[in-house]
Every structure is written in C-alpha cells, then in structure tokens.
Image 1 (cartoon, helix red, strand yellow):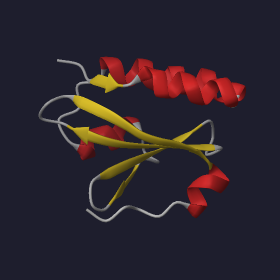
Image 2 (tube, rainbow, N blue to C red):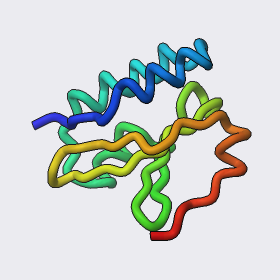
Image 3 (cartoon, rainbow, N blue to C red):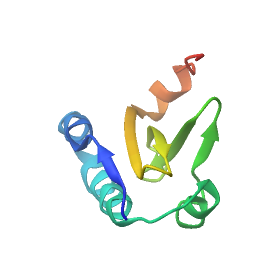
Image 4 (tube, helix red, strand yellow):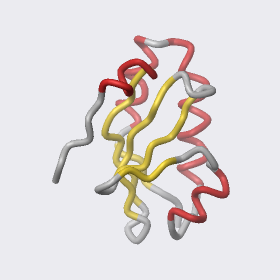
Length: 99
C-alpha cells in the first residue's frame, strides 16, 4: 500500500508563492504517493538527506536544499502529514514545537 499525503494543497499553496519549487515538490509528491517504506531507514535509502527531528518530524530537503519540507509520517498507517514548507532562511528560524 502506498502513502496518502495530506495535503497536496499545502504544496500547491507554497509553489504559488515560490514558483521554482513546483517541479521539485511535485517530484517528491509523486515518489511518496507510490512509496512503500516500512520505516525511516527504508525512507533514507531513497532520501539520504532526510532528517529525523525529535519528537517525530521528518525533514526533506527540496530543490537542492533551497526549501525544507517538514512532515510527520505514520509508517504503519501509510500517511504523511505536511506540517510546514519553508525557505531555507525560514527553516533556520523555526523552532520545533514541544509536544
């Protein structure tokens, strides 16, 4: 079973402001929509630059690290929640919410 990405509209909203991100975000969306990863280690094989950030965020570098996509992923439920998309400068100012 492939992943359900919630929500593509978040990606679209971002690329409408940052048009150069559209191709990279769509490529990420396409890969994740077909992915069958069982855990973070398997995901890292396809996305070596992905980082796990406590408590439970997975951060993807988009478009050669120009943008950062912050997600939460349930490998057991095959669901990805898009939490934030930042420019690199915005990401540098982001602080991880404490749960």
